[in-house]
Length: 108
Length: 112
Image (cartoon, rainbow over all chains, first blue to last red; front, side):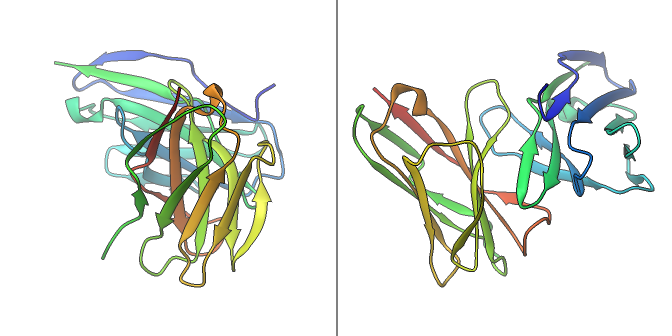
């Protein structure tokens, strides 16, 4: 089993749709969690950290379920500019583990 | 406020050669991590440097080595290049370990 697994995608959604990504991790001792987005042939950019209580940043909501060892990302009112690959990241003991990413395409 | 910078942008090497990639962290950051990203995959952790020491290492052979300098900049060295080393090499910096990391634009290495 991979340490960090994400929905395989791709997700193709119309503008204005709500889309959710899930990510599971295998190491129960993992300490920190993040979502990054990566545009084609660009570097990953931090989207948001994920806190135990859940957190929201505008149209984006991230949640963490430690008991089930998964994190999620919800995007509301999708924009064309949200088209990218979304990477789930799990941190443990100086070691950041990335998922393979889920590709999102938002269409007009 | 300069972000993370990497050099060179692109590099073409031949099998068996050695390569050195360079990274300058974001201003105020003291920790540098290196990743390898193959096409269609997520970044794979190579190692992390903090206080000029390698703090953690991913599942990469000893051909991959690094260094951090007193000004927090870092180098990644790869010896005896293989075709499979062709990838995007990303450097990320943070303030301390376990914190949000900010990535540079990467160095695209092609081994022929």
